[in-house]
Image (cartoon, rainbow, N blue to C red; front, side, top):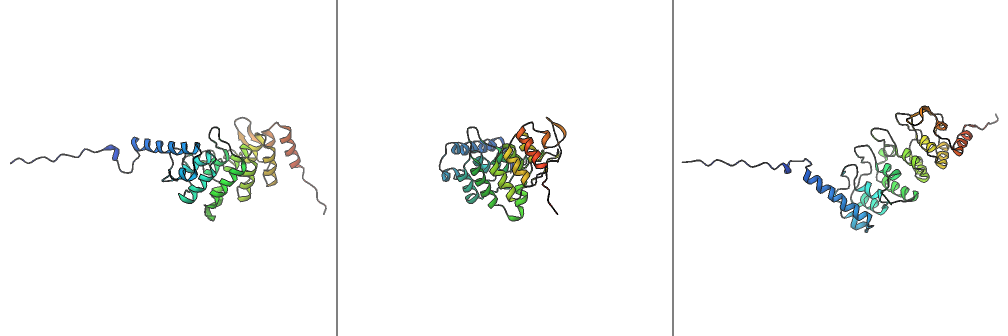
Length: 243
């Protein structure tokens, strides 16, 4: 009597347990595209939010919360935080947080004012535990050590800078090179931001290295604008007090 040989089951590589395959990576990409199209078309917030199953999964360097911010959709941001349990403390592989995105990232042809930026930042902060808030406000990118305050100062977003400082962002936090938010404000000619930073205790004598300006650069070494230099000069003139 012949015994039939059992056929070995062919292993399906696309069903590998827990691994991201080319197939499901493509599906994830298509899903993000569908979501961002809804954002760009300014569809109702409820309809956009219903397209999101997991608000905390990153597709590349972005997730649902990041994209809603880039399109200036504060209504979607609020919905993701409340209905989809989006975690604002999540960072991408580069260490960028939602506050970095609020401060400096906009999709093409999308712009929103500082009031909208502060509104989104406040909604995100409300969902962060008290014990984690300082860490959230001072999140650093993995390579450069770039903070949300540096990003907001770099872009000249006065109200957002004011909000970050009020909530506890470190005014003199520095990158490994020594570069601070005040250096960014001075370099880019953001007078009102620089005045605000100095009023909140920014140290104008901190030195930094920069590929454009060299080493040991103080604030007045990174700008040639008269108004910036005048602000720095006035800041160094300490008022005298009688005994």
